[in-house]
Every structure is written in C-alpha cells, then in structure tokens.
Length: 494
Image (cartoon, rainbow, N blue to C red; front, side):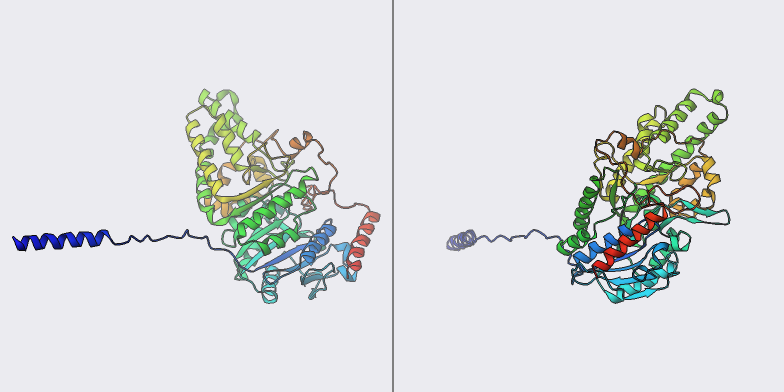
C-alpha cells in the first residue's frame, strides 16, 4: 500500500511540475523578399536615321542631366545622319560615357569611322564589351535607338533579311536585323537584364521569341513610338532609387507614356518576362493548329462560294470576322501587317457557332492566362486605354502577300515559326484583313488628338513606301536649319 501511495505521489509531482513549466512560443518573422541593390550599365546603340537627330540629342541630354552614379552608369555608341557628317561635332561614330550630372554635352571617348556598319553584329559585340570595360556592373541594359519595322522582310529576292532597328542612312538605310542582333549580343557573352527598343513597332511575339536567351526582359512598343521617345533621366532615376528592378521599369513606363499622352497619339510600352515565353508559345502552337484545320473551308469558299456546306460557311464566316476585325497596330496592311494576337483569338471565340466554338473559347482563355504571365506590365496611351485589352503583335497576312513579299523565304527561319508553325496557315490563308480597327480609328474620335506631331516612323526606305514619320523637313533649307539647331544645342552646352 505504501509502495502504491508513493508511486501515486510521484506521479502527482511530475504532472504538477510539467503544468508549472512556462510555455515559450517561437516567433516566425515574415520572410522578406530580397531587395535588388544591383548596379546597372545602360548602353545606348543607335543613329539619327535621317530624321531623328534632334530627338537623339534630346535623349542623350536627358541622360547627361541625370548623370551616372555608383549604381547606374550610361554609355553610348551613336552615329548622326549623313547630313551631319560634314561637321566635326557630329561626325563619325561616337562612343561616350556619361559622367556625373551635368548640362554639358559629352566629349567622345572614341570617334570611330563614319562607315562603321552598325548593322554588323561584330560592331554591336565590340560596343557591348567596350561598355563593360568602361563601366562594369552587375546587370546590363541595351537600348536600341532609332527607327523600327518589326520583324518583316526587307531587301530583294536575292538578299532578304528581317527588319529590326538602327537604320543607318549613312549606309543606305541598312538596319540591324533580328538574327544579327541576337548574334551580336550572344557573341559578347552577355545576357542583358533588359533589351529596350526605343523604336516603333517592335512589340511583336516573333521578336520576343528570338530574344529569350539574350535578355531577362524586353521593353518595347507595338505602336508607332512618338519622336520624343523614352525619358532617360527618369529611367536612370528610378533604377538609382528603387530596390526592385521590375517596379522601377513599371514606374518608368508609366511616366514615359504619360508624356506621350500630351501629343494625342496612340502609344504603348510593354514589359515582357522572357522566362515565361515557353508556355505562351505552346498555347500559340495549339491555336495555330486549329487555324490550319479551319483553312480548307475558307479555301473552298474562296474558290467556289456556292460549294460550301452550312458548317463550312460558319467556319469561313468565323475566320473572316476574326481576321477582319482584330486590332491592327499600324494603318497600312501592305507595309506592316501587325495585329494583336489575343484580340484575334477573342474575336474568333466570340464569333464561332460551330463545333469549333468550345475549342476556340478554350484556346482564347488559355492564351489570356499565358499572356498574363508573360506581360509583366503594360501602359497604354489615353487614346487606347478603356477601348481594348492588348497583348503583343503577331503577323497576319493572306497567301498573296506571303508569296509576293518574301515571307516564304524568311518566316520559317524565325524561331517563333519553328516552335508554333504559325506560318503554315498564313501561307494558305485566302482572307485579306480589311476594315480592321487601328490607331487612326481611335484618333478620329479622340478629342484633342494631335495630327501634326512628329513620330519616329520607321523610315527604312526599302522601297515599300516606308516612313510614316513626317521627318523633320524634306526641303534642303529645312535640313540646314535643323543641322544648325542641333549644332547650336551641342556647342552651347560644351
């Protein structure tokens, strides 16, 4: 009995001792997102392009006013237009490094030959490596400055390549092609933090696909870019003062397009995360496959409208509605057949009333989700906002243009087409886009829209009637006044 009582007593004491122990709680601190304190070197690569010299000067002055810091530095390799090459201040191909904030014009670090081919990938490679030597940093941003013409072909039947940027009027308006851009970057051994197209019409899914291994992000416009271009003082300011790269570029994009709003012109800046492109391309491939399946009905209708069945008529009508009503980023189909990809899919989905209906609705939904991943941020000008949800441009042509404008010799070489087979249905598509909504449609109804403002245009002069921008004077007298004005600005700030 005593033994049992002793055991009970001990058990009681053990319970009591446990109950008297003070409970301690482990406090879990919320996990903080890592702050980006990277240093950046911004590299500007471009030329006056025949009618943009004044704008190029203004963009460089913005960088000079902001000034390089320990965290953000700025280099450039620029060439003034042919008319400027007779003047010492604007001759040759000039390399410069922006120092601390100043209102003084730069003194070139090097002046290379006027005939240096900016379209040569080796020239781009050399500039990137030179910039890294002059201003080493954690991350690099490449600005491609000049006219832009998307990916589309230029040249003739014997020499066809894809358009891109940096059209050099000193060397017959030849531009840096998409393939050569990729080669120039890759040969430098540098993956860019961001490629920034300060040029027109470069916000295309075909272009983004080619750049997935070259850059983490791409910033570009799918519309015509106003001559004002980017605001480089803001770009440097936000990179200097932000601890998050993406947030800095978002704010910069918002501010830049806000400036463009004062011109009353359509415009956009879209930031793309290239690491998310694979899923989007997979969904576009599915879309492309269904479009190809729908083509036989359209081809049958084109050959003999009376021979199609009711189901084939529904399919053809759906295609015609989609192709003729999706948003077009430029006003000339013959020059720039660039249409919004997601808008195209959505119109097809809403217009389908056949067995394709559920499939097209599903495709449009999946594309929507994929674009939400790819597009980190998009700022549209006031003319466009609240009118359309836009994604990225894609090429839509009929089979006639496909054969007549060298598409058959180059589109299949694009990485985009290799992955999605988008060109397969384009090569047989009999439907010509007509009556598509475009920037002019919105401008006609936009109160206060400016019709006489300068635009960058594309201005390649490849024989297809390019050059939407109004230039800065077509007469010799106007050209001379512009030259004197540019020289006065440069010399007054030396």
